[in-house]
Amino acid sequence: MKKIAVVGTGYVGLVTGVGLSHIGHEVTCLDVDHEKIDLLQKGRSPIYEVSLEPMIQENQKQKRLSFTSKYEDIQESEIILIAVGTPQHPDGSANLTYIYEAAEAIAQTINQEVTVVVKSTVPVGTCQNVKNYIQAKTPFPIQMVSNPEFLREGNALKDLFEGDRIVIGSDDQKAIQTVMEMYAPFDIPMMTTDLASAEMIKYASNAFLATKISFINEISSICEKVGANVEAVAKGMGMDRRIGSSFLQAGIGYGGSCFPKDTKALVQMAGNVEHQFDLLESVIHVNNKQQNKIVDQMKERCGSLVGKRITILGLAFKPGTDDLREAASLVILDRLLREGAFITAYDPVAMPRAKEKFPAVTFASNVKEALAGADLAAIVTEWEEFKELPLHFYDELMNEAILFDGRNCYSLDEVREQNMEYYSVGRPAIE
Ligand code: NAD
Image 1 (tube, rainbow, N blue to C red):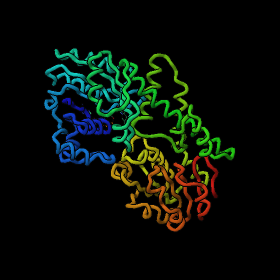
Image 2 (cartoon, rainbow, N blue to C red):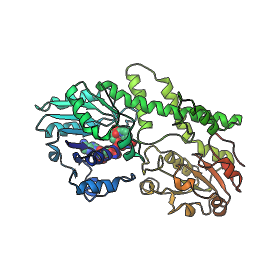
Image 3 (cartoon, rainbow, N blue to C red):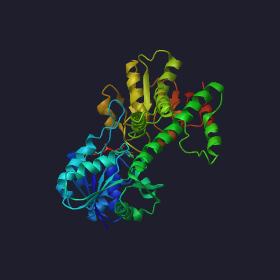
Image 4 (cartoon, rainbow, N blue to C red):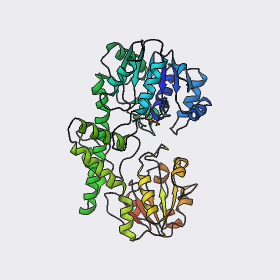
């Protein structure tokens, strides 16, 4: 078993650190955010992720998992994983400030040979540059590995333990071996390659998935106009194994901390080498259009939204997480407030984060309270709680049951049995 440090305890770093301790490694998770570390030291998770908190507590008890904000506490680690954020600059390119701050601190801290593993999503060439940067500042040998992360928020632990593949990129065979040994207990297929290809695999994978989503969303818009049902279309397409059925759910677009930023960063990266990535630029454009769809539909239905009481169900960028980064809800709330509507919102876990951003929005404590007295309602995140809500509640609780379902949560047949107006994505409206 290995002595491992994880730098950055966000969604990726925390889940990875906890998982590695769970398979028996001795893991120290480090973050510069003292509040997060205080919480974690008490066994509490700063993020919502199914089963994460009990697993933190169990591994703390077993003395395999500890949390710190001091770099000197990770001095003896043989492997240091970097999982700090790589947000975007205003022009869409990746902001590597946190990566270099971590690299600087690592260079000042280490007192032995170490394998540095970059899990953060970074533009091609970054790992080599970071290696050179650290190596120039320390006499101890550094081996550098690119090990991009593919976990999905809301499903993160499952993805860690049952992922499709682990990509390990390095120009150093010894480092590849070390990282393969670290991951061996997960029993997940490992793919080894060079640093640059590993970095590119991450961007290419996210860009491809985003392309599938924007593709089906474009098809859904045409379906609406020609009287086809996008669900049937996606099902028929997905039965072809060359296409596959995943990521073919039409809706109001992708969000989150990865797809929007990684697609933009790849367009930038291509531009840097004088390649105009036309396809990906269109994917991004389609997604922006899609995130505005519900408000467009509402305006088409009602004309002015001034003074309308509108209920927003779901704020997180997808179910299972409290993450609001680049969520469609942010675009929708912002636009509806500017249109002069009164908004009540409800989300099972993301409301504390949303309250900070939208003081003008009323937050309800449950879905029924949220719907009471509303003129219009919209489903923005497909939480199970909404999917399971008996449809008669819309009619009973709202002024008029007019629902805009941005995630196609209900079958048209069940809606037809109710007294409600229903607008979804890529399917005929029920008026
Ligand atoms: P996050 O913002 O949730 O967490 C990053 C953490 O790093 C924060 O807690 C921050 O305080 C800490 N940090 C910043 N600078 C530091 C430093 N110098 N030393 C120690 N800690 C520092 O980010 P995240 O969502 O976990 O993403 C991390 C990386 O993984 C990003 O590059 C992201 O693109 C990538 N990624 C994210 C996901 C995801 O689903 N969130 C999936 C795959 C890949």
